[in-house]
Length: 469
Image 1: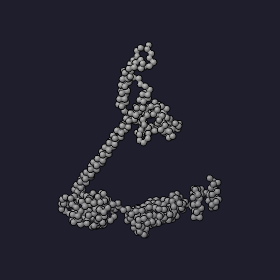
Image 2: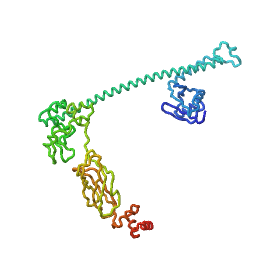
Image 3: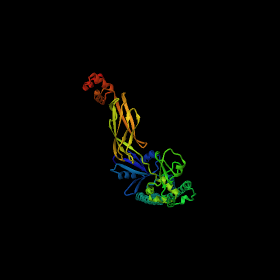
Image 4: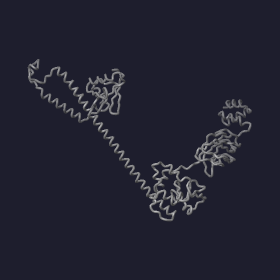
């Protein structure tokens, strides 16, 4: 065997690697004892097909090494031996040894020397010829192999039976779990119907002025006969919490997402005016978005219609803006202090709602001065791009000038536009050269000192700055 071959010991799903191969069976047991704290293992290796060949002595171990000759590693499979099996084997060995000892006659006469035992005692039966001795271990090996094959067959049958039983149990558990889940869902729906039905009865009584019994048992067609199409399915009254609103709907013209039912509009004071909406825009819009299996909910009771609202709430449309690019001046660009600046951004309508014509660009905060308001003349549809421009003056002192603007449409502000520049105090004829020096990495003080000492010659100014610093 090559010295590069290693030993891999496989115990269930665990694999351990030993660099050196044990010389004998006893040294292999010592290795197992050091790894697992016990040498009591059944040791085997894979033979031809799916058979396992067991190792119990040095010869078996050599055959195992020959089996893996030319491979990278020798793979041995170990399995723990039961203490009860060990004790039973030890007891059997003790009994066989005691029987052999009792059957053998003890010779107490040391003076008699017999060369041939058969001549001394022809009746002795414990003498076995060499041919019989050589034949007996072969028979024992054959018997052992037969026993091992029978054991393997029994174990395989038992494993198949256990696996089949486990699969049956898993299927039964799944069926039971599905039934229990269905029962729980039915019970929850019934409790929801009762609670929501009791709440909506009061709203129906306040609307119609008469008591209505068994509201949860009435279908959508019955309700439409009485109230027509005045059933606003996805709307909640902000006064009493009625949902859906039955009858006329009153929507605030100023507040975002604020609606009243008929009773709340008559009885609750509100500072803004309302728009009266008799019929929803699309009475069958919400039901069409529900899956087929949920259509029974829509055609059922009033409580089920309320449950539909929680399952199919539509997202409110919001105005959104994204800054694609800051055109001019760019961020941290150098400009003159106290001078006008024309800031431009390239924007995109990222929302699902159009920006109406006349949307304003409102100044929110910053140290910009004399800011002029701007407005978008055309309408900007979702996905379209537009260039926005504002005018302002920088402060007289040097430093950072920063301002923040937002878009505003009918009181709703959205988006965020930022302008950030660096300001310097200098003469108009010095600004361009000063800007070049500052873009090269020099500070304002260094640039001004270099220009003043070089009579505004740019090359001389650079050399003067290096000489002074």
